[in-house]
Amino acid sequence: MPVGAKRKIVRIDEEKCNGCGLCIPNCAEGALKIIDGKARLVSEVYCDGLGACLGHCPMDAITVIKREAEDFNEEAVKEHLEADSKEQTKAMDEYLSRNIKDIINQYPKVGKILERYNIGCTSCSLGSCLFKDIIEIHNLAPDVEVELMYEIEKELFPGKDIKKRAPKAKAIQAQGEIKYSPPIKKLVDEHVLIKRLIALIDPLCEYINKSKEVDSQLVLDCVDFIRNYADKYHHMKEEDVLFKQTGEGLDIIKVMLEDHTTGRNHIKQVIEGAEKKNKQQIVEHIQGYKELLTQHIKKEDEILYPWIDRGLSTADVGRLYEEFNQKDATLPGDFEKKYEDLVAKVEGILKKWR
Amino acid sequence: MEEFCGCPGSKMQDFRGKEEAADDSGKPEGGGLASDSQSHKRASQLKQWPIQLHLISPMAPYYQKADVLLSADCVAYAAGDFHKDYLKGKSIAIACPKLDEGQEVYSEKVQSLIDDAKINTLTVMTMQVPCCAGLVSIAQQGASSAKRKIPIKSIVVSLQGEVLSEEWVN
Ligand SMILES: [Fe+2]
Ligand SMILES: [Fe+2]
Image 1 (cartoon, rainbow over the protein chains, first blue to last red):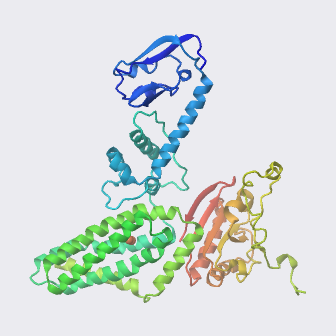
Image 2 (cartoon, rainbow over the protein chains, first blue to last red; image 1 turned 30 degrees about the horizontal axis):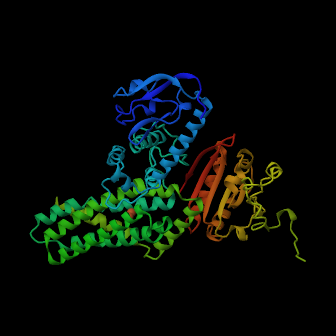
Image 3 (cartoon, chains in turn cyan, blue; image 1 turned 60 degrees about the vertical axis):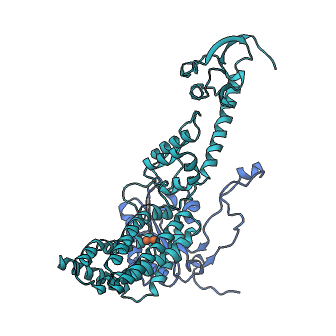
């Protein structure tokens, strides 16, 4: 190795260094690295001997000394920095393709960061989504995405000099009211009637609890709506058409399908309760259904549907719309009207009782 | 020999499937010849003839179940990448809602495209000038009298070819 003349260069006292890494981001040349728990000079040619790293060492382990060393080489630094940033991008990309739950298990603080951005991965029961899917699905504003990724990257690579990255280019930026394509809009509109029925569940429970004998007919009317409108008419379009389009293997879809199944089980219990005139059983499970569906619809309207919509081509939109229409055509013409009337009827009964 | 008595300019022709291989708007992959990418001509995405809304027949094979683009005449001149970004993969009809005559037929043609050709979607491209919006109304009128329902999208282009808005209108 060629050794140049005597010049200024940093010296790290191995005894004193505790490997905290605070010096690393302060070396603009990327000359320092934590190796085996100690800060080390990667190469003499990267160190300009200015000592910008000095003041950041809490252990006073770094000093600038004068000794024979290879000359500082700006070209080499440039190459080194470029290679370093490429390596960092690669390392981060690798995390992006990993399961978010694994990342959170390893770095619990990442879960906390996501929570602060209203992304509830920590509380998700299934949650084997990939990190990159989560970022994509939530469609954050570009500046918010940059901040979030920056915070997480710092957490994943402690002691690394992390720079903010440009956000991924998005076709359409979410702003204000969500605009849905016609087939997706159809599903969102169906949610509106379902939500109207869900809003009746609390008064219904009150009514059941306060009346001497259970009004089984009223409960069964609600069950009729839930089974035929919410489940058959609406969920079947999701399950047979929409989720087939996205692929059912996706975790977010698995969560939705699991919700549908849980809902069906609640309703089975409600029917059993109505038959046995068991107030407690009815109330417990119809409340369970209410809570489940409220969250479920919110997830679909605000996260799942807009995400699916962003991935649809014009031709996809046409195909989905046609398939939805074909599904609906298998039902009697007055189907929608019938269930709108049913909701209005239940609304009327409960209002009158109050 | 095929007998054709009408104007040869409006004789129906279907170019789909022709030169699909050369239909690559990108540069040649990898070690392509340098001269090749320099002289690379962008292939036309037009797969049919005729295109004027009066002249087209909804019965033509290229409209069946197609994604159709209904474009105002001026759009193709304003939008720099009209072929690559909007015409590609679609069948087209063009019209001018300001100057064309006999526009009553237009909404009937749209209706026939929806009901008879059973088109998948209709995308209406217009210029930002107010009178051009008439083409969207024509499309909506045709759609509302059709028995089938399909998604209709409206794309408005500025005089400089920028997309000002792109939204579903039904
Ligand atoms: Fe659902
Ligand atoms: Fe739903």
